[in-house]
Image 1 (cartoon, helix red, strand yellow):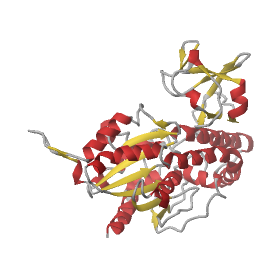
Image 2 (image 1 turned 180 degrees about the vertical axis):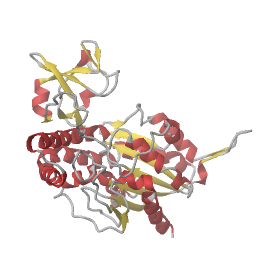
Image 3 (image 1 turned 45 degrees about the vertical axis):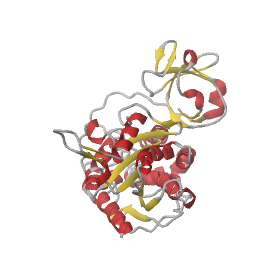
Image 4 (image 1 turned 120 degrees about the vertical axis):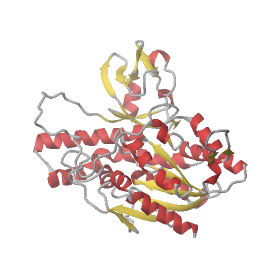
Length: 392
């Protein structure tokens, strides 16, 4: 099930009951396990400290009133007999092998996850607010420790803020951060990565996986036929979910929003120390919505943006001059969904096809996806070229 969620989903639930209230903070996908005379029993993915309906972690009671008000989409997952010879729906291709999942310590200080309700304070990707404050202190200071390497955050003259596409597989966020750290640090640019709406995006991904499986089973579609069918089906099946995700992204960039809070905290110590770094904003895929919102002229007094780069942008018409980079190759073997010839980003573009006109690119990246461009180095090269021009 995918549904709109409100403030009462957060924090401690009284006896595991989600009390209905008005107001929406985002969208979310979860599983319905059963029901009683007052509502559904659901299983969530927010860890062992959430829920506790009937004293069971991860389970909660969702009232019929809440369901009627906020339901977005429902589909059924069916268990099938084992068939080792069949192709998995999410099978990975062979055009570009993904790197191994990096150690958490190698990306610490360079990444945070946010959702509509704020900064995610714990989890495998997001270390939370305390780590963010440590990074802010590091960037504002040069610390010499006897017998140890000097920790000099002041050497970074620029900050590159990456607003990532949330339509990612579980391992991709950490891999992307790892690939896009060292090339920038070598140029005295401190890279910081924000993943907004990963939880909400799973609603769209799950829905389109269901659509692809249905088309494969019912109509035996594959390749170009399946691609055309999903592109045509996406505006009906997924537009409402992606529209909510986009609206959440714009709100997150405004003062008081989660992404704006992250950047204010990140730069607070440096500004207090009189350091005025150039800030470069990079939007990737659907993350371009937040990037453009941050770079709008009425935001300049809050976050001064020196350059804006949009990579394979979705759902946005820039409000200021921007460098645009597009993916040059059509994805075929490295399928997002089995048989679909395109990435999650291209599927999102089909879903929101009427929201913005295509942008002419200044760069064409030799890759079939944003992730592949990050792994082969072409993404970092294009962004660094933009930053270099803005410094001149």
